[in-house]
Length: 117
Image 1: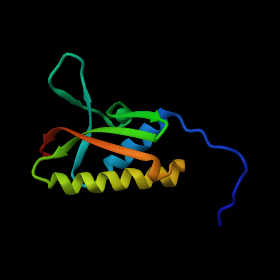
Image 2: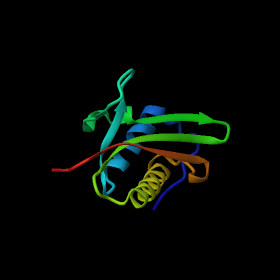
Image 3: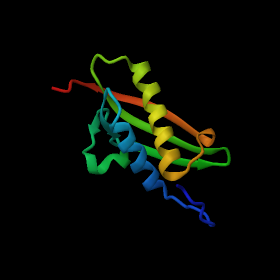
């Protein structure tokens, strides 16, 4: 049974990025989060404790925008994985941080492909 508690909830952008990163990593086809390094054309696959570096969070009057930089498994259906990823991140943020999916825009950037093996 859930109980409403009066007050407001404030969640930092870093926490939102962490939640989104962990939700992304649970999706089939996602090998990891990527970090674009300054002045270098390649990307770096981020370790599990630094997932937030692959998520850019920005707040506007219209709501919240997330830019997810991901590395996909080679050979997966990119469209299906991205749809599943967007749905999973949106659902997880709604459940944990009480962020209204109607005020959330998710942009997915596939920065690299990699074999799991």
